[in-house]
Amino acid sequence: MNAKDLSRIIARHLTAMRRFARALTGNAFDADDLVQIAAETAIRKRRQLRQPDRARSWLMTIVYRAHLDLRRQAARREAPLNDPESAPVQRTASNQDARLACAEALDALDALPAEQRAALTLVAVEGHSTGEAARILGVKEATLRSQISRARSALREAVDAEPVRPPVRVVR
Image (cartoon, rainbow, N blue to C red; front, side):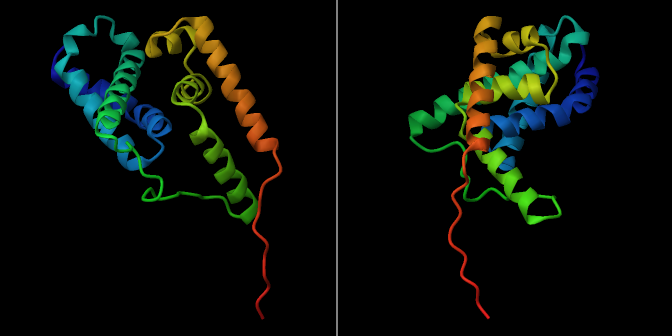
């Protein structure tokens, strides 16, 4: 496969790659860096893509492996890969309750262990089958199903929990 054809394939799957990278890193800045690293890696290793119809899974695997590499590097440097304080929070809901619920759900998703977050994102958000997602993450399908189950339970627990809200003082 030549670089031009692969660039078209990457462009077609770029939104999914970004979404997955955002779920892995927790913020848009690191996600964009991760996607760039993955795209460069894909172009460099384009001869490994033997079945163009499986390009999406191949690209997601590269994104995930790049994420693992960055986490290992960050752990060696003892510096966090993402900084939630500097990440812009994007909320488009029109009312406050919906924005709060959305923020709580995103916080709960971000609080999941990386493996569970990746498994759930690939299956529930990106629409991969459990078999495909297991191949992308390099785990057995049973392990992936277990990770998804634990992730869903943790999300249910977090969303169903009574939110802790600070007292409101009315100023007139």
